[in-house]
Length: 475
Image 1 (tube, one colour):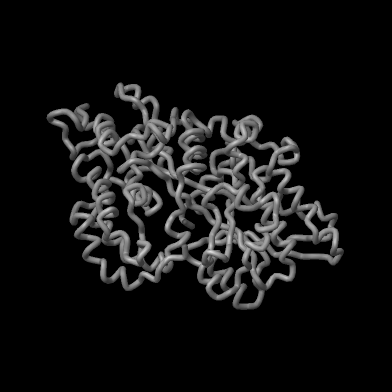
Image 2 (cartoon, rainbow, N blue to C red):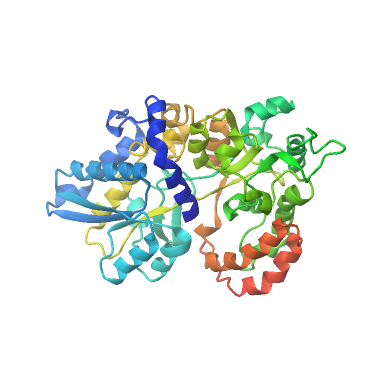
């Protein structure tokens, strides 16, 4: 997950240029409609009970990682909250752009933990929760009218167990099928559907990908004489990378990373079937670049722009870079293996340390940080999605962020509807000891993508070793 967060941070380095090109994209939260639900969130933070009842000066320490543009957003949101307290609360915002976990761990060991911290789930958050160092935020959501489980978008809360809420994300990220409109038009084929109900079957998806995979002689993968060793244009890319991509199809096929009864999930039939279908895109149908070809394949934005690929599976955040590259693109839902398609949610979180002297003020700061009005530049620019459900259901609020160059044709159906109604939490939310399990699984999967082993054989070969690392689930 941190890899995805750092990818977002990297592409946001040039976000200022994009703001110049997008009229209205950089408006301050203060110029937004003061009737918006997220503004109510900020107002609620400012008028929380502790403000009226306590005049003691408060200094909060807040740590996070960010690109320069994200830093501006976070610092502005923190300042907005501090200003709302008429100077009673001051915030020491500390951006730690590299080696975050190491530096945060050192702060904790030195009894200098922050009050509020941005956290990554699979590496540091759950170990800290197991040590009892993180506050249960459920005590706040249970009595807060503006930020609670009815107002938050689904799948952005982290739990160490069913009663202990340890983190809330600034917003969700999910996955889309990006496509180059010009390439589809040239091939004379229909683009990926954007509606959940119209999702391609896997076989339909493969046939379309074949028509869009072209060798150096101009033949596509459906035609006699097509040469898979001399491909100049692939039909699709992005399926064999990290677990965030191929994991969508594990879930979509009824599988899991760790089963409910505590088994290593990737060796189960539902998972190996999905993994094999993805590997066949590379080694049987030749519509997807293999590990060797991927070494020279550019990122999603340039691959689509230069027509090296016609479709790319990538995170929602890639709307930013693809729009900035001026690709004539659209987005669709992922193909389905069984009856329905789904998308995983991936995200970091904000947490409060138990050592804080100011739990109420820390909660108010989190509310300010996840307020969609505070992060509107990133929401509208394509990098983020809002944290509050009202921004997915109320037309006036949807139009604030889901229109414009970075929100292409099909976005509202493929992203908003899927996020709200057909998403699922990723494995880092609930699989214990996840990193250790994947340290064993990933090298075996490399052999699958290379065509050296079947998915079933590769996962069976590591099953015993992986099972030894399985420590159960948190859900």
